[in-house]
Figure (cartoon, rainbow, N blue to C red):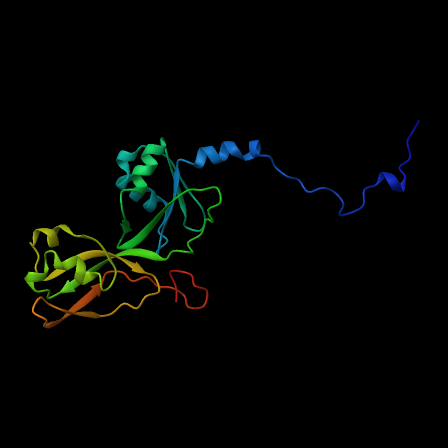
Amino acid sequence: MTRINTQEDVPEIGTEEMLQLEQGDVEEEIEYWKQAVVCFILGANPPWEVVEGFIRRIWTRYNIDKISFMPNGIFLVRFKTMEMKEKVLASGHYLFDNKPMIVKSWEWDLEMNKEGVKCVPAWIRLHKLPLKFWGKGLPKIVGIVGKYVKSDTATEERTRLGFARVMVELVVDQDLPAEIAFKDEQGIVDHIEIEYEWKPIKCKKCQGMEHE
């Protein structure tokens, strides 16, 4: 006997319950990507092959398992162990052609975009810096501009005295002075010219990076 559908048999539009996934539906992928970092280069979007070669070169000793890329210039690098991932995150700052490569730990709720960056590393040059300031005073002097990170080898070994080259952390929307002024140990004011090898550019309209 054929059953005839009545009006009561047809569900009303919009009354169906929304699908809800369970933890077991996602935990395998979450566990897989826990050993990954998310990275992208500010101020540039080089070809995939170039970035892959760069990443494999700088992290060659960290047992990379896989490098994956997204169309918006973001890369996911998965390591074979959590220990290797943590070592990469603790290794410091990375620069690609003087532009900062931002590295973050992958988290399941991490938004995969280039926004939200507040501080970036950059190399600066202090021209005609008197020799007496190349020691303990140097981190204090560059602290006027940003947080001192490190000096390059030639600056540490004092083999190139035309300028001191220092990496600092800059706030992306801060003013970047062409020179800084400070008082020396005798109270005399010194003016030092600063050259930025790369400057963070932040859009005043959308607050995004890499364009004005």
